[in-house]
Amino acid sequence: MKKKEGFLLIISGPSGVGKGTICKKIFKNEELNLEYSVSKTTREKREGEVEGKDYFFVSKDEFKKDIENDNLLEYTRFVGNYYGTPRDYCQEQIKKGKNVLLEIEVHGANQVMRRDPNSLSIFLVPPSLKELEQRIRDRRSESEDIIEARLAKAKEEIPQQVNYDYVVVNNTVEQAALEIERIITSEMSDRNSSGGGIV
View 1: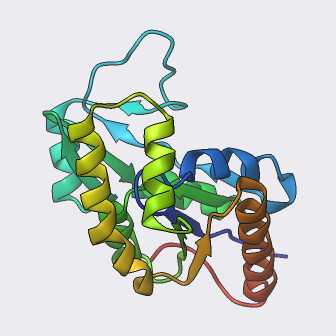
View 2: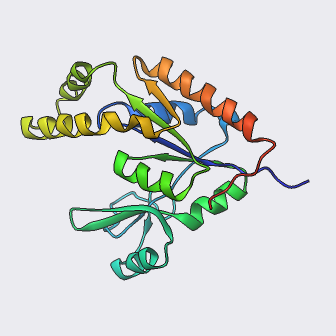
């Protein structure tokens, strides 16, 4: 019997909405069969980082070849370095039956959704912009300029939730994680009789 393939799971939303915390929580649920996507980057490896676990560290020439050969599901340039999601790595994991989790910014998510119509996309929203601002301020880790920039970007990104398969309001981490787990479980059940994989 052919092994059941997994699918790409995109979890996106504005900065500060709680993507990382929620992804860590759902990742503990082994029944969801999740595997984190490992990104490629041209930046230098930092102390303690592991090749193939934290990132695939590559040269700029190699990264540019990947762009030319359409080997990336999405990519971006940030502070002089490239970051991207390798198509071949995701395909390998999906063929093994894994559901590959991409915790990703809205711009990158839009690129992936265009390239893989079979992906499952979930947009996390805060209960309100006021609540989002409070959460960002509570971190006490950023200057006023950066906070304002994050909030301005959030106002542009939140209306894009209409492009996603599901929208989940993050009232609490527990509630949002539970809702996402239910969505993934339901999708896994629905896809059991149909094919998956990246096109």
